[in-house]
Image (tube, rainbow, N blue to C red; front, top):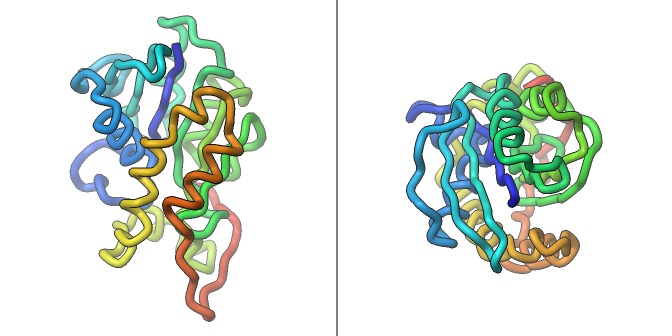
Length: 204
């Protein structure tokens, strides 16, 4: 069994936040692969299904971002899922909007959701880093990640979320390079304005 985790904050007020792109990816996966309806469990919402014969459990922690590890650890322990079968989808300030990178292990990069998971399970799990861009100054980070995507972002966000769900079987099969390539083809990264300044993630 694989545990697919989308990170975000619960509640309608946060639903379209950049910080909630992990929740959006989880919703897209459940729809695309016709998983069972969401239900409350493990301090979150879960949906079950299968992809190419492998059982899947999709989890959206409802603990708020900085306590995400509680829900992830509870689900992993109950189903005896090893870290290398856990895939976490999350926002990443250090990548331009629409850019995706897959990695196993590594640091949390200032992301409180990842920090919490690391604290409960260690860091030997897979991360799908979904770029949301950086506002240009660290003082603007919190309002940026907790701000909603702009209407214009739909031009890259909708195709990206659809591609993540559609090509997920490649990642499940261990072909992370193929997965990233298909996403780049299906959802090209928008060209940033010349004045835009990119920076690193900062404490959210």
